Length: 103
Image (spheres, rainbow, N blue to C red):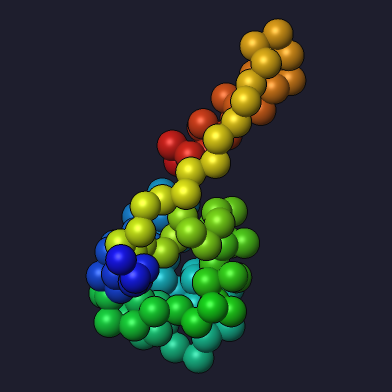
């Protein structure tokens, strides 16, 4: 199957991420330097998609990889970690990673 982006699901995901981070459409507009907030609302409504440059900037703003923002018909590529349970630093890092993913 050819991978396709689902604009509607991506918009819903954008709204969810923004809500979890306490960001408004105006905040995103100002961060990206967009001329009007309507662009952000069109993304959220699933009418349009952000450009790759804007997706790259959004990934920095949200502290998420682009693949965690965009939704489509391919399976998610989840990172896997091999954790040595005797290494306390790795346990703390893994717990932090899990906490970030839940946010």
